Image (tube, rainbow, N blue to C red; front, side, top):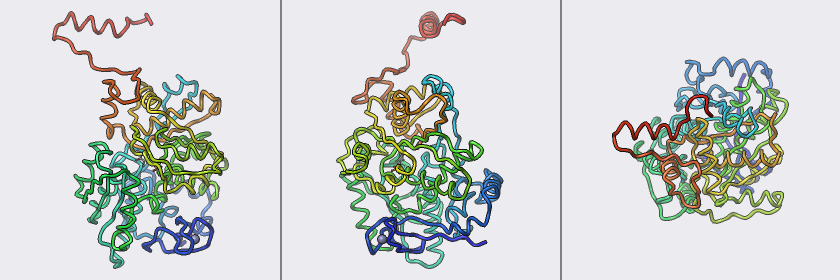
Length: 446
Ligand SMILES: *Cc1c(COP(=O)(O)O)cnc(C)c1O
Ligand SMILES: [Zn+2]
């Protein structure tokens, strides 16, 4: 069977392009482009057939199909030659049963999908494997592409730099100077990308990179490039797969540029379309209160929308005031009875710390999603019998400054109620015994 996909204008004007064309917006109406698939061809295999195929490939050694993204290649990027796939075995990340945290808030069926347990430490790997593979195919086919480029709040540039280096393709990354974590700056530097740190914010970097890629020899890797969404949409498919092909009741996801929530919705809708699931989960989008254009728009029932000037937040990966995928995200939220929540600096830091006390190690963006979870439980929207999956978008190890700052009480706007700083003591056994007895009660006494 031959499957196919193409780029198509999201505003329904009908304009189509090849996935190998260097184009990011519809040349007729200016709309973003989405990848569409030949669903009739995909229907030639039954839902049970797809589930069996995906299960058989999961974590297998049959390269590249052991990857969570490439195991679903027919749904993602069917026409690519296997030899041009650039993969780091991304996907199939653990869905952590957050049992203690869940019981603490009265929602025992609580899970955290650890997308940060990945090659470069964030979910961005899921999308970048597809984009860089397509560029490798374009170069193999003789297209004049000399580099890939992106503006980034950190994780996109880390993923782009690693995949480009693996493929031997030059990468250019535009970062807002002084606004990404040291760990995130170190990644593109180490992978040999050309790193340009500009005196502006993310939105300013985005404006510059869009001018640079007008020269078609530099290929844009930001999420307005919908190839990334094809990889990222596997997260929803994977979540269902991890519950034996059943969608949970709620999925909570932190959101900045709104590409990932759009991708999540896209994957789930495709599953329903092809009969792998019957019901859809509800989706809650979580934004930092300091960068909340979607939250404000949601308050008006999405009637009004205004970009905002994003203020500083510990959740630096979602410090975005003018999200590129606003239109896509609103479509998804309408289809999934979606809600949008926001979290203050204090709420996101406290939520991350509470989760860490139950065995997680949450990045600040995941803290925003967890804070949204707590609010939805308090409001009764999420009930005790609901199965809830929180999407953790990056590994906490990328945000050491956030963790250290919380526990030594130096984060702005944050009252570090769960701070657990080290106790400094002389090397004397009596002092040490006293410190232990003060902190930890005797067996059976609590
Ligand atoms: C990119 C990113 C997000 C936001 O995803 P969008 O597609 O921009 O909404 C959230 N968390 C982390 C850690 C990220 O890297
Ligand atoms: Zn159009």
